[in-house]
Amino acid sequence: MDKVVPWVSLLAAIEPHYPKTGSPGRQPMPLSMMLRIYFMQQWYALSDPAMEDALYEIESMRRFALPDLDSDALPNETTIHETMILKFRHLLEKHGLTAKMMNMINDTLEAHGLLLRGGTMVDATIINAPSSTKNRDKKRDPEMHQTKKGNQWYFGMKVHIDTDVNSALVHTVSITSANVPDICQLPCLLREDGKAVFGDRGYTDSRIKRAARAAGVFWGIALKATQKHPLTTTNKRFNHKMSSIRAHIEHIFRVIKIQFGYTKVRYKGIVKNMLPRYSR
Figure 1 (cartoon, rainbow, N blue to C red):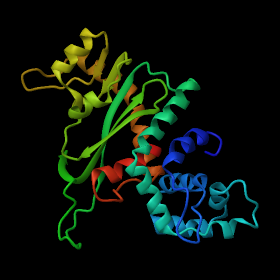
Figure 2 (cartoon, helix red, strand yellow):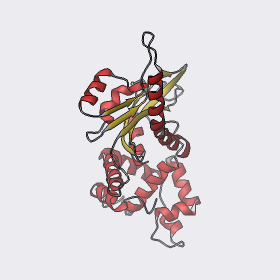
Figure 3 (spheres, rainbow, N blue to C red):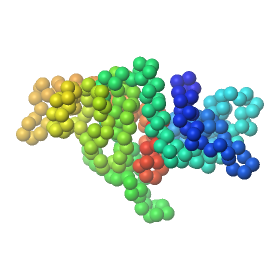
Figure 4 (cartoon, rainbow, N blue to C red):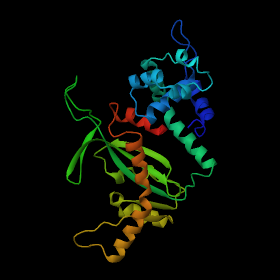
């Protein structure tokens, strides 16, 4: 990650908003260090206290946070408190910097020929939120909602993503409460330069389908059967073909949930949970 992340561009976007002076008697921590810590916190799904402990206990993380210092200086230079990590995240949130970071990363991928933008795959997944009311307010997060998927109920938020068909790299992220239908976020995910759209039955909409075909866009949304119109053999073959193409987007959710461990929201509110995900 030290080699592939466009650090120079990201630091240049954050630097105008980063404080030039710290608290009395203390200089602000180096911006490059705070950004690297922020990324590691997201990659390893660590809380603020856990991230602080990791800097003291794991040498590889200290070296990544401060790559220019020798090993003897690292322990003393990582005297960082969890509140500093919290304040840095609030800084990114206040100035909307994570969205800019996402765009810069996509520009880097496109410049290296990794993001081709020939077609798009759309899908959504549910991230659970605590449903217990055993807290100070005696209520659940008002921005999270419950929804039924199959025969099971879920409470939390929903992550909608748009990925490139050729590379399966994420282009756009949209986050809503769990009860928002997938089709409602489709206009936010589609790209003007897209030549094809692939999605499951949750994105079935005849009006959007007609508009897409009129614009010359291939409509690869799975067909939905009804009581009056069951799927024909040709329809089933079409769905199977579209599913084989769309399957790559499921790998993104596997990375988010299994490798990054993001199966449950960490903060209250949609916005606070949305911002860190841009950097994944």
